[in-house]
Image 1 (cartoon, helix red, strand yellow):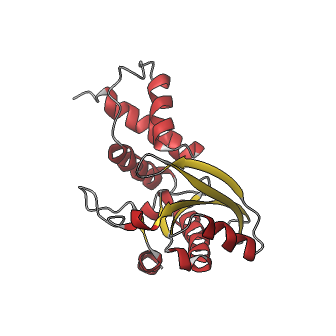
Image 2 (tube, helix red, strand yellow):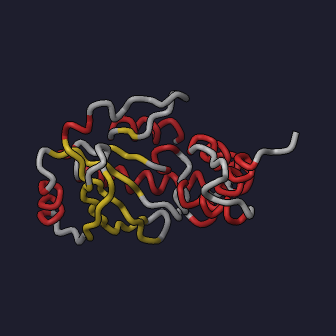
Amino acid sequence: MAPSSSDEIAATAARLVVEEGLDYGAAKRRAAQALGLNVRAASLPDNGQVEDEVREYLALFCADTQPTELAALRAVALEWMQRLAAFRPHLTGPVWRGTATRLNNVNLQLYCDDSKQAELALIDQRVDYDVGSTTGPRGELVDVLSVSSRSTALGEHVTVHLTVLDHDDLRGALKPDADGRTARGDLAGLRRLMESVS
């Protein structure tokens, strides 16, 4: 049976995610264009389908490098989660899901009673940071604090994005999806992941 355009888009998007570090949304749009499909009319795969293809691609082409790079990024995440433990940090994205390579950033979500607390903590720790924003879980703009962190294992700096969310957003944060996978994990969850592969 010939693959559907959705399958082709997922496979092409997976290559872009791994080789260029694109997020799933951008990779799907680029993949559809690369295949000569109308992005608006094309049946784009869901993120789960793309993630399955990413895992296959990693197993085929990056099995000798990706586990080491993932471990290095998780070590960076662990360091920052320990430093910012007061803000109930949760790791999300490819570093949590196990599909990250050295091209990926570390994405942490902080749950604060006051959004300025995280900034004050970085200032107290003499950490330089940039401030950006993204759309939060309730559709509102929330701050994203970005810091640069040296990874000795990778021999380069890694960008750590700290998304500052309201304490109430923590409810339901660890709920698994239909496949039983969680979108994020806390410090204890990250430690369990790291121990399971060591």
